[in-house]
Length: 321
Image 1 (cartoon, rainbow, N blue to C red):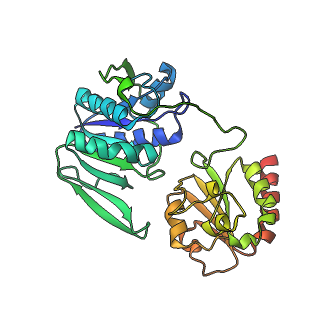
Image 2: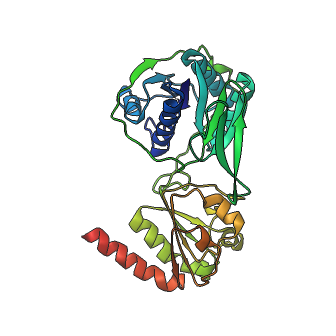
């Protein structure tokens, strides 16, 4: 059973999330006795495309530039790639792009969809996968009964595994006319000098325990030392201490960094729903019974304003060694 994985690129480069997808697809292919075909859309060099072979892809289809992201156009390209490769399992990331494309693909290919899966399938025929539900408080088992299955993988749900393999890179003409897309980009303004929250591998976040918007300087210093993005809880953005662009949680940005540092955040269920997919969570709070400690891998009971300076000094000392 062939597996197709759609790998996004950013300015012609792949990130760890793409390698995680290919690693996951490779494991699914091992279980089905098939192979992995990776699809790339956009201007990506052959050297960069061939790196996908190191994570399990045997073939990489390069669709070239398809213009600005348009659901209709990209769905057509991925469908054509699925037909060419004979894929019965199609895997995408459970991010904004994947959430937009997966339902369209499901309708077009008459395929069952399991979104936000968190582990490799428990069974193949029929496909049985796990996913988080109720804001991460429980797990559900989803059985896909259709011949073709579409999965979106929650970020940081599977380890990146290097196989040492090689992939053949093929130019792919999907036959889809990108000019039929309805999305028109009139201007592009890229933010510079600041790490985007959605792309960051390390995130430093603050809550009401910081007591005032005037106390954010030490958090910003920590973020600078770690090369991290800044975030905050909803009460902080509601108070106007920080921009709403930094609000993480169920009603804000859903993120999945490798490391999430939470200072003065109690850990309401709405907040944890937005950060629970982080690989590691470190929490600092004065209340030892705060819900954040249930989700945290490491916790410090203490005042964030007192802990932060010592935390920064220790990190600087460690980096200086």
